[in-house]
Image (cartoon, rainbow, N blue to C red; front, side):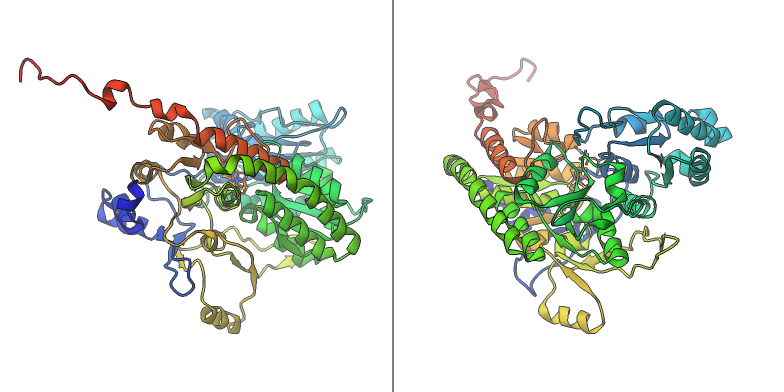
Length: 540
Ligand code: CFN
Ligand code: HCA
């Protein structure tokens, strides 16, 4: 076992060995050997620009805005102003599912684009954009059209906001607005989440005051219905008698966003992508938010209890307990059957801004060991588990949100602050929100790596030989070629759902099949394993 020979410090130096000194010094700050002890926690740098030349796993700002936040909404026409490739890239590749029923509108299957050409870059694309908005309106008469900027739009300066505003006024019955989410902005897709959140809050939230029927009203924030996760969570909510007014944004509709301010509580699943909306709704409408996680059966039970506890009504608390008691035996039976085959297997996870943490719950349930993990674009709070609340200034009438889209300078931080440090910050007047972060959940001596790149991924696998590697499509085949099974935790390959109780069982079964498959033993041809012929070439 290589792990015995290679301690985390040796692995870290081996990862950095080949870099030029300056690059090595920068990357060293993003690779942390976890101490899992307060006061001893070393520092980690996150949310900083990827060094040019490095093949990052990250995506762009446009992907974070159009693909991630707005993509899963089914009855808004999402029109991309840019070259066709940008639209094609974000066209259902994320596997966000929807159910429009027999009569509901669903534009998710369409790929709307202005198909920008060289002449638009030279002469400007605003007229073409207005024409495309008109065409979409004439064809579908949607409630809403959202326009997304791609890199060239920002470079030539097309005023997408004025074009959208003019079209909105012209139509009268269709809300048109735009997102300045040019791909190059910020350091990752994270900036795109922020830009999307601000515009969703400005143009959608609070548009419909009609109070929906139902008890225990919540919004589920940061759930995108990948592989049908949201359907399983909806099933559980229904069973518990919890009314979900709006999901941001899995299987969502324009009207759900518009009336989301009528909910009593925001349950935040992916904090990284949607915390801005949660904070703005708390500031403007006084709706508090709690962090939840429906990945993992135990985490699901814990999250349901957290929601019930917020409402504090015996009826809900009892129903939630009854649902947990009904669902858990199936989960436990599956685990009893599967864990003897998965116990002590090792896994690495490098995904986005929350899944590397959320999925650790499922691997814990399978008794597998997460030996290295990290985010592509997580911020300090995603590692640390503590958010310093922003000082948001909201103008209630004009919905002016002070721009918060600025990316920070390089920040180094301790993923867990000591009590002493916390007290000092408290004294200085900082307000905090506390939830679980990745670092606190990782074992001592594990490697936490931010913005892992292709070179390091392959090196890491070579050195530590995990039983399973989890990341995205760009990593999939290079890892499999190294003879290690690979599970995509973005698109779930073609699987899912993995959320909730039924999703957890589904996940256990798939991981069992992956890590216990015999196929990996055939990676080396018999003559590579046991060379029987030795000889020399004639010219030697
Ligand atoms: S569905 Fe979410 S859970 S929204 Fe975010 S941070 Fe991406 S698209 Mo890929 S799978 Fe990933 Fe998270 Fe939140 Fe998905 S871990 S990278 S931007 N993500
Ligand atoms: C994105 C979307 C993505 C990509 C996934 C992957 C997703 O960042 O543009 O690399 O496999 O989940 O679809 O994160």
